[in-house]
Image (tube, rainbow, N blue to C red; front, side):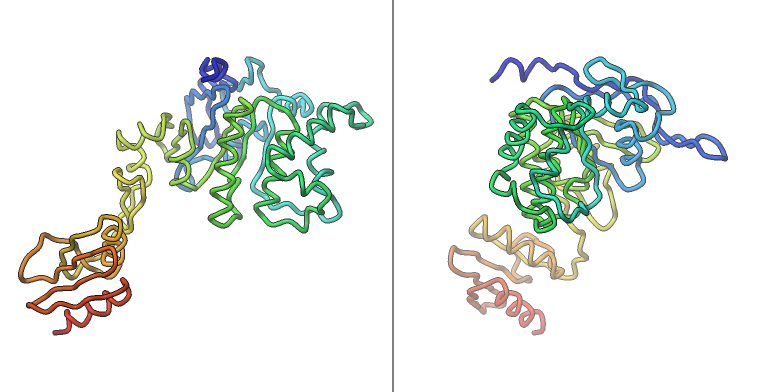
Length: 340
């Protein structure tokens, strides 16, 4: 492993930070005494229920609103929101809003990331062009360089904005809900891409997201915000094992399963059934049964039993055996048994 990667050099520091709003009626605090840091090459996911203050924290760290108390440092340099050019050399920000540009190519939009490094004429040097090409390659868009942005899919547009942030060549990249407008395959691809970029470029990446399951898989650490509670920070695994993750998103309608790392909907069970057989096919069969109100119980002569093989499902009840070739057929057969 590269020694540079494991030095745990802090790129962002925000000691004793208070965030909130100034209004005509006074100060509205959102969170106090935050002690935040992000290491070089680290990807941190900011999670929390709606209204917990994630957007306020992102806006504060991005210099879009002033903290109520404390300072924010990038590479030991205090950020000055009023100095936009200097700030843009310290951090790159990708916001949630959809990209609304018409007659601009991918290359032209990505090249805007170099403006903090150009002279007042904005002329791009050979080095600037090299940075743009490198960023396009890193996000897999080299072949799209001459395409107009408005012809791209939402996933491709998000890659363009990430390339623009890379072209800006800052040590810290912050993204607000980067997968908000994407379908599941593109959400997975973007999260995987960001993780790979953090590892390969040693840039520090912070992103706010509602992708709880993906964050558990890709984040090096998680910042977990809760309304009127201290911000919790730790590896995804530590937050799961100590119950913090489960508690933060606890609802009566679903549970977080520590064993699988998945959220499970709580269905009301009105029937009992037992099952045995092939483990993988049993897993998916149990999901279907759970959704249809069946509780999995120990085998008993008074309840139906399902034997799951690699090719079929055999339903047994009252000395009668019905073989099914799919879960759909099985559910129909169970319904018939329950009607007897």
